[in-house]
Image (cartoon, rainbow, N blue to C red; front, side):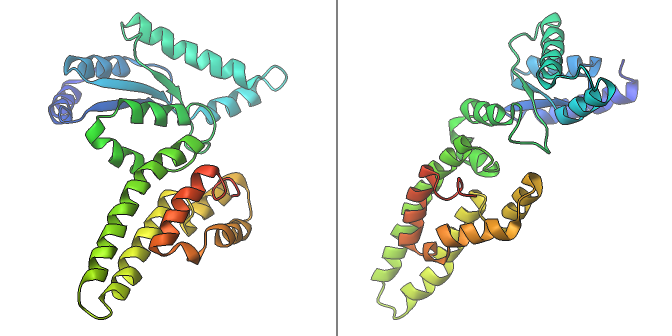
Length: 246
C-alpha cells in the first residue's frame, strides 16, 4: 500500500498528467500493486495507456543461467506476456496493449510494434513530432520518417526559390550554403546516418564503424547537401539503398 507521503506525491503528479494524451506504464519486474493503482488513475481521467515490460534481455539471460539445459527464449517470453496479460485481465484492464522491450536490443521483441502503435494512436496534430522524435531502427519507422521529411523538402525548396528571386547578389548562394546544409544534416540524423547514430549502431551490432561510415559516404555523401540532393535522398531511402546497405 502507498504511504501518506506517497499518496500526496501521487495526487500532485496526477494533477499534472491530465495535460498528456496517453501514457506508457513501464516496469522491469512483475506486475505490482502500484501498477494497478496507476492504471486505475489513468483510466479515471479518460486517457489511454500501454503496459511496457522492459529489460526482457535480462530475464532471458537470468533464465538461461538458471536453466542452461531447458532454457527456451520463446517459452520465457511467452510466460512473461501471459503473466502481464493475466494480471491486467484480473484488474479489468484486458484492453490494455502489452509490449515487451529491451533498450539494448531495440530490433528485437515488441519495440517496432510499440512504435507503430504509438504513431497510430497519437493525435493527428502531434504525430509529426512523435515520428521525428523516434530513432530509425526499423524499416517501417524509416518509411514514416521519410514521409515527414518529404513535406519539409518542398518548404525549403520554396524558400530557396523565393530567396533566389530577390535582387540581392549572392543571397541565394549564402542561403543554400547554410539553410540547405542544415536541413540535409537534419535528414541524416533523422535517418540514422550521422556519426553519432552510426557509432551507436556499430556498438550494438558489433560492426566496424569505419565500414559503416564508408558505405554512407559512398551512397549518401556530400552530393546530397543541396536542394536537388535532398530530393534524391528522399527518393533513395524508401528503396532501402541507403539504410539497408548499412
